[in-house]
Image 1 (spheres, one colour):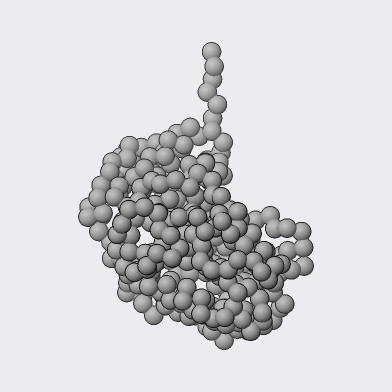
Image 2 (cartoon, rainbow, N blue to C red):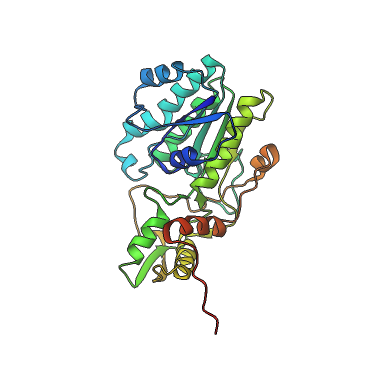
Length: 300
């Protein structure tokens, strides 16, 4: 078997990487916090040294965006120093590393999809710490792919889809921000992309390296996302409250959010032939798991 070390095993992406159907001969080893402390560089080095890993997928992260504003040291330990330790160990063992990053490295201050080489300028601690992780991996000397993503959702853990369904079941009307734009990302679809990149990097030393973007295809905003969640939910017999648009100013948070999180897929399509499906169909896959398939209408 060719084992792949995966951090963040209890998160949305790590869960989907563990569930992913890997090619024959490959083994996903998804490590949780209990298995590996990402604030302990020595433990990270020891874990990488203990097996002949084929590759590393660095999916573990400190994702509490608002809490990071006051928990700066931990955010930097997990989001910057842990990837640094993983990439250094990957370099020493001569194996590739695939590192998951975020749209929060961009300021979100213009229209259009962000390209992989656009200037970065994080708005807060979370984005800055994730950018630190990128820089650590990029300068480590390890063969690598950095994959930025945004708005990750799934049938697992805490995310926007599950929150909307939970709150929507109790309230007739919800108010959702309509001036932050982006594309939702299915954790399962992201996991499939990460797995494809990791396997290719491990098998082919000439495989492309660098920075990539992955989200599902098509633009929306949080309000539009919520409306589609409830439209598809209603077809499955789930909650379908009304959704009113509000502005970011109406819902202040400790951390500033990028107003535009749209990510260009040009690089990942060119180098890896990965073409994300529309976010609406990816959402349907998630709701099928949470609520079941859409109910068929009775025909007279």
